[in-house]
Length: 103
Image (cartoon, rainbow, N blue to C red; front, top):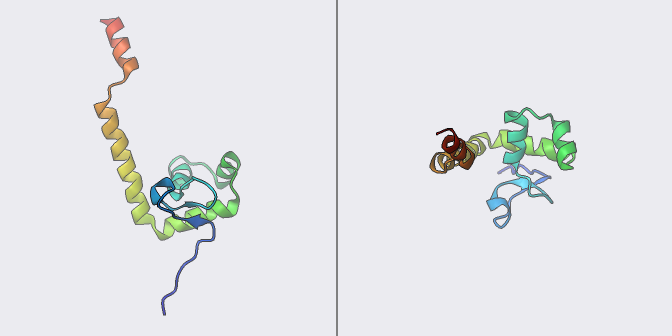
């Protein structure tokens, strides 16, 4: 008999947030919550206050993350790699102007 884990506050739909798991009724993804909490050091209370979420929603997102840690960590890493590639390809206009003024 298979046991299915249910996340009351988490949903995934292809047409919203690229199908990434998110908090029901919001466009806030589990990945967003993880980045704010685990990477940026926001407390659960800070996230709840800043984004008008309930503590239950945030804890559900974190529970989902720990049950799917490998795939979400991989998605975060891919996003960081993509952002870094864009930074490398797109020079800073401000840095360019400062360089031109100094030269």
